[in-house]
Length: 157
Image (cartoon, rainbow, N blue to C red; front, top):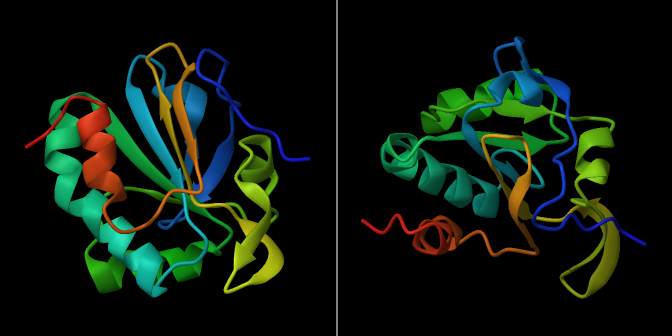
């Protein structure tokens, strides 16, 4: 049974390595709104589309007070290649043991091309300034997700 976070719950704190080898701790971002999105694998087509959509929307998200963080099981070196290749302008977090992904309910069984596999469940979490979950979305579609999220947040361009 997978955990499913709900609005109003405290977001699990974490400290993870980034694409640069630095670390990010969620609680250090308290006072800011955070969008944490979980994606299966760097440099795959859907994950690239989603990351580029966040990159292209970053200015409007930041203007509304949001920090954006991506999280996947990829190692920092792989994340660095992804950032370099696609000009990503926000931190990507490495969770190779998928501990944080599990705490957020973004790791578990899912259907992939008709087969049941265990892996990252593409998810997005909006965390408020106090560190509480404002929204938790599971099984999101990569294409068009950022535009739908911005609309839900009242940030339409």
